[in-house]
Image (tube, rainbow, N blue to C red; front, side, top):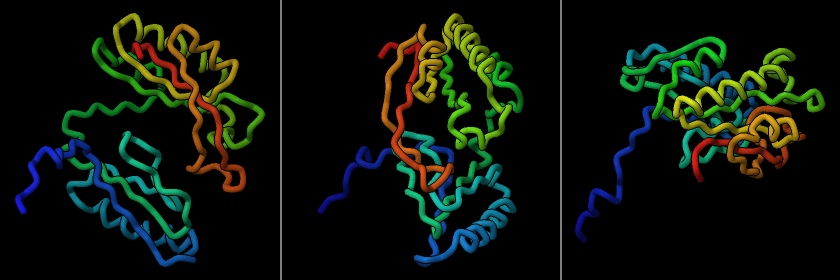
Length: 202
């Protein structure tokens, strides 16, 4: 039997290294956290590892299309390692989102997933009462208009609400059904509607 041609196994261009920690069924979340911390501490000592992020009790959020997050499980942890080479040309900004958006130029692509503005659902207030308010959503709308004028493509994901539909009305909006699996409150995880707003022709 001959070897399969190379195109059946395209080279991966993802910069992340994924590490899974799976303990015996029935292991507590506390024990899983302790084991994952040992792995994380070792990884942080490696010169190739620049950023190490741990997700305990579930997989990481879907940060690229083909990655399928693992369902909640107290005996499972996933660590994501960003390597030195992946940051060689990176420019990291810590600050207000308007400042960050100001660095985007024509031909760039921007994805935004801001905290939800709501006073009725306490799960979204776990980010902090003043993390993201309605006036910030208005500022975001102004920022998106500036991106649009500069020729920057963007996609925003947000909870489906009258407020969001008003804010993102100038652009294409699609409603999608999603499942809340990461963080939050275990007993109230459910399916919910989100909208995808974009200035890209679909």
